[in-house]
Length: 285
Image 1 (tube, one colour):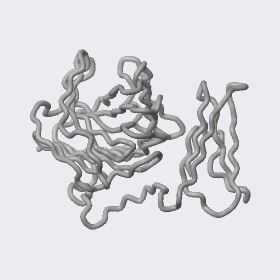
Image 2 (cartoon, one colour; image 1 turned 120 degrees about the horizontal axis):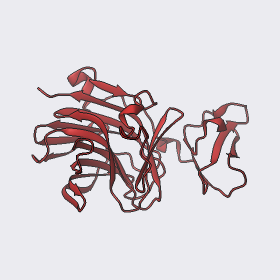
Image 3 (cartoon, rainbow, N blue to C red; image 1 turned 180 degrees about the vertical axis):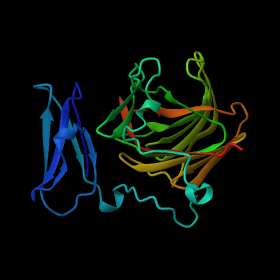
């Protein structure tokens, strides 16, 4: 079941429980989105709690066929690329529950970004990225820098449609360098991949390396789990979706730098996705 509540001030929260008393989501967690497998056939109840007093709200509930429910079982099967089997344990691993939140706060302010274009929130051990402006590409870097690497991130696509996009940017500039650049890899809600080279933010300048291309290996739709893998070796970038290679490009403009998150809302205002895991293997000789 996929449930989402929206309100003008984002202060209405979900509670979900079965008629047998089993609690699937408590409203004290202050979640506005829930996706999960219903454990048994019975009545289920949804409660709504407003922390800001009287307000309007919109509630959406979707119960797709069982086979369409996303799964986090991503154990490699024959033909899939497994970075652990190839490289061993990752150099760095983050379950995105807040233990490494300092990687994401602005070193100048000590705060997570909340600008006109992008917002990052870590709440109740969950990490969310929101793109605020429709048809606008936005990114945000951590402080970590890599040269050659395998970078892997697990995404929940959230409530989305069409080309609402989520992904990663890499080999970007140093903090406060006064410029923006790097390579962007994005997955869309409709199951496509996009790769481009960002050369400047002001004025905006980019070179498309892989135009939007559908892949059967990307789980399409709202609240789908997808693992994005990117291997950077010299001037070659190899892109994986759930362990399957789906694209490869060669470009020598940028050789090292910071990595971070990317978002590009297409039709969903304030499009929000979740990152549940991020790891990298440092392959620099």
